[in-house]
Length: 474
Image (cartoon, rainbow, N blue to C red):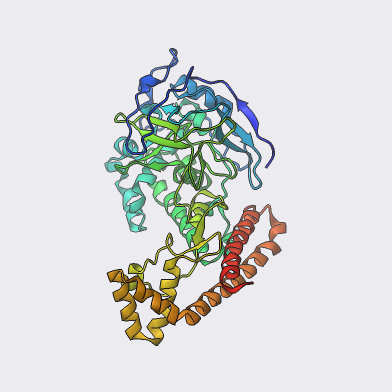
């Protein structure tokens, strides 16, 4: 990654305001910020679904430039506030297009207000449904239900809302923000079918699911939306891009609303993560909140020194496969990763023992979680000692640690062999997949995500090697 370059250093808040650190639901007052006095009225943001024609389409080619400067001026004009020291920084990432992320050039004490976004600028699934849903949408929703995508109704209406605004071109009050969004993504939905074939089984399953979901939402039902012109609803690439915007930038609130916060959604720092605040796997610098009126706030969770990125958590750090599939980055600082042990059938006993992707872990220090050993023991006993399997479940459910430990010691030779077999088989699979990707790496123009896939496979490989070294000494 090349050295960051400052895009714009102007600050719109005279002094950051200190707030008590509240990690639960916190109401912060917009009056804490000094608003600009020339802010235009926001009533015209309540747009309609009428057809505005194909006026000024946004260039969504993957190498198209992003207009960050105009977006920043737009944010200022429409009342988005940010603290002294808050700046957007650009850097060239290892894979993909230049990255834009948030950082601070000043020391920020814990509880400092960093960013405020007024509710009127925030795109919301609740607001989109209220605005766009009507009897005329029933045929489209019927298609959505017929392809088992009705669970994605919130994302679907956010996609439609963005398409409506894109259709307005420069007449849309969100046009400068839309024109600042990334065009290049490295997540699963952006991968080619060949890329998916180079991924290990779990990641490949996630990738196929993401690509399938994008296809379902971007094709058939969109064509039945009566207030979109043919230029838009038949443009599959545009619909796919809108899908990426919604699924990588929206956040879910406690009441189930999905919201996209302009200016609160610029990219990450070390990878193509499409949000303003980079993902952090440990203690993150930023906590976000919505007040009772729906306004958005971001504030520091501890004393943040100058020069630091401003990060939030995008999800469970022990599930890097999901983070890669959804957001397109490798979380190589994760404390642990799913062990990739996937039984043919998972019964209620295994669930009681803790079988889940966020508990069946290989740690970066080489240790395997207790749940891994419990499941391996259960698998061995299921085919060799049913009475001891019953004893294992009884001891587990009653919290009888001594009995469980006795069983683990009794069968350690068998369970450790199962673990070694799993490690060796998975490493062999990874080597074949990586070789397949490497052989096609010369076709980088056709499969530009292959280098990142190779990096992902190597990260997983090193995790497995650490466990093998810990328990088997090689």
